[in-house]
Image 1 (tube, rainbow, N blue to C red):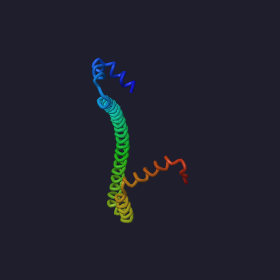
Image 2 (tube, rainbow, N blue to C red):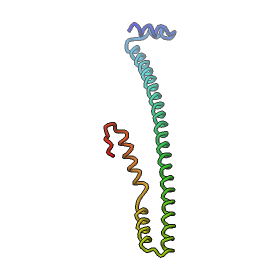
Image 3 (spheres, rainbow, N blue to C red):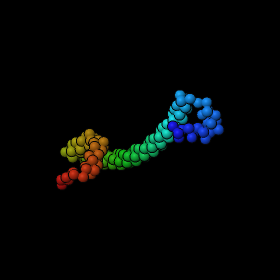
Image 4 (cartoon, helix red, strand yellow):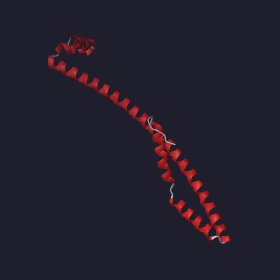
Length: 143
């Protein structure tokens, strides 16, 4: 209590207030001061948390964008490759028709149907599994 009195006496108005003050009034003033200091402390903590959240958000968005770029690159490459493969198959089918080579035509049409049934997205699942295996230090690779 002596320290609180010194604090109040150091203020010009505090000397007059202290001379008239009673115990409950001092408790009220100290309670107000303590509440204000607590408010400032919490405000500073919350400001720091907001900065941390903003930093985490920026890092997470950058990671998402990086993964997006990788995925888009993969899909572009995969679909370009599929387009070339379909073009080659159709060219070979046209040649087989022109030659009248029905066994070759049947084989090419079967290949075309099977290739059309595959999805580049199924290879993404395999790629994701490889990344998981690479991250696992105890994974045993079998060749």
